[in-house]
Length: 345
Image: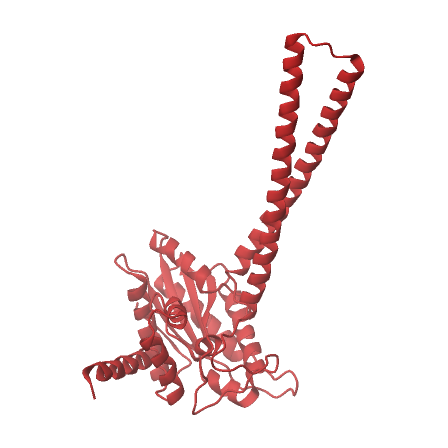
């Protein structure tokens, strides 16, 4: 075995271990593709997902077009056609964003055409005014009928320009609405409606810039794979939606985001260590007490729980150190039996 091959094996193993991915052939092949083409689109997409110390989830791998877990093949969602492993899976939010981008481009082109028309009319209007002014200065004879005709033409152009300006104003307003819609859509998770990683990272920057008393809570649904395996991804998606609703209600006033797969992140501001911990504990209690059932059959899913790690911002923190600390506390909660939370206070 060459030194380069040995190093590649070690790096793949370290990546799998860092992201808590089982070392089966499917996951190995996915990471191998990243490591052997670090400048490729797949590697760049993964780098963007894990920026800031975030762990890569099985769902993230699936959305990126990677293989499912070979030892535990996941059933495809009934609402999606099967795709080959080489195809990139486009989530609904991206499809909606593409549609908005196309609509916005159309609005921009229409707006630009209107403005060009106004500029052309204004330019011609100016030429006519200049010519008539020059004739008057020279004392050229201009009949009253000719002057009236010229005045009428100018008034028509003024009216046409005003109409075009009104149209341009309406187009500009529509364009602003489309851009606002696209901006909001780009910051929402399509399944739960919660903030996504982009919105979360933007809020995180504000905390780093001096928002007083910020805490990060990482919450991971316990044994979520069992729900998908036993009841299908449709039920799993509805469970995630229910959990997202509970977190949003119980943590009202704080930023709750779906951070990937079955993991949620909560940015808590303005609370003490004890208050932040109690907030997450109330959310865990509410979820555990909620009786979730399969809509189609009425079958009870049993207690649904999550584990959490909660840490306060430190003055010298970076995204990497903050997430590493919260992730370590979450990992401890998982190792010590799940359905619990640990804080560093």
